[in-house]
Image (cartoon, rainbow, N blue to C red):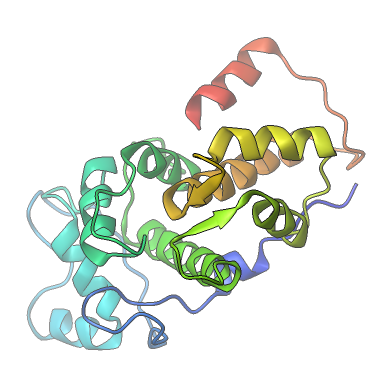
Length: 221
């Protein structure tokens, strides 16, 4: 079975919030950062910190967002996304969506994101925002039900009409889907597909699941 690819997810040249206009690509040459220093202390310091900020404005934004532990939790991510206006308004970004985004990228089970995870998430959000704006032709900040199903199919998912209907019902409000819910849908589809693919050793679209394994996956996202 062929699963949807996520190449664009990891390589999309993401947009930088606040410091740079939405739509301007992020500069390249970003250093790899390991966060594990003392609380309140950056692994960058002095001239190196200044050089890093010039090389990657997203690093500056991350430092302003992260807590003293040098990582971003769901509440901090919510404030970050709300202030950036990425959802088209300055109304609070969905906290539940922030939780599932962190869960998707939280590879060490801390419930938080380091810089590299934050950078990967921002690239994905920028790509999803671009796709959302392409289908939001009337710039209402929402998309219609049939447009969501078209996007899901275009992303490479091969789902039954019944499943598509269930997804649309789950994420629509009064027949429209806002950006926060659109993101939640994209995140859950990716997370569930990754969970299934890791267990589908024969790539046949069929797996045997232990009940506890299934519950753990469902509750994590």
